[in-house]
Image 1 (tube, rainbow, N blue to C red):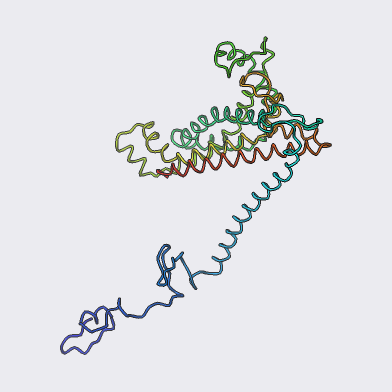
Image 2: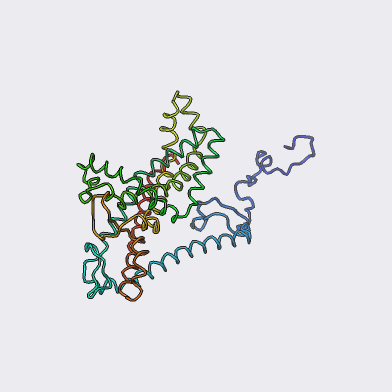
Length: 369
């Protein structure tokens, strides 16, 4: 309250005092400043000494916050240390394979590290790993995205709950079960289908079988391995995509409806662009499992150690299946053990490269996230 004539009342409000023209009474100039220890600056501000302020500081940071920050930073550091330790171990133990191998590690299509002299290469297993994972991605990812869209936008609540639980349960099935199913059911039941593909689509080199003369000669092949891997990655990709699609802002969906979009147009213009980064992340998770799957692939492949572009012909090897199948034979040979560790190193590097590439793609696709 401002003091008037005949009024003995006073005011302690600095803004009212400044309004009366009292010199030096502006509370924004020359007034008492808060203690620097109690001052909370927003992240990104510049302190009087020119240093950038990182956020909460001084007595405003509680002990629990410091402890939690330390634990979080320690967890991240442990992860980096473990990754570095794995890389160092693989490189160190694989040195004999690099120094004593008489073949070309990148181009030789044979595996005989127990020989004298030892000769082996990663060309065939690299090809089999990439080809089987590629087949799995081509088959599994579109199906998984379709399942996720149906659960999140088409199915009733009861049906979505039941189907979602079924898909999640499928992810818990051991890989050995998938491998046995592929060996004892999928291979016998698809011999006719593989023969049909070879006969009518043999003009495509991938589907041409140049060795089989009867239906019974079709069987273990990279195609079957890719199908088994596709079924195994569907639950992972579908579960992640489903959660991403459910996070689409309601305002974005309502805007599409307001513009007269159909259900598919709403999904195409609102849901899929928003979930693009999540779809890529889900696909990379599925690819990681496809690249590293061991026992299921080992059961449905015939080891041949040669690059064969005819995916319906018997044969094919992957890094993981080679390590599993050849480990028992390598016990008495240090070079053979080193060769298997070198195969693990190759798989480790491939996984890192794939995930790094995925992160780069995701970083460029965050417009709608």
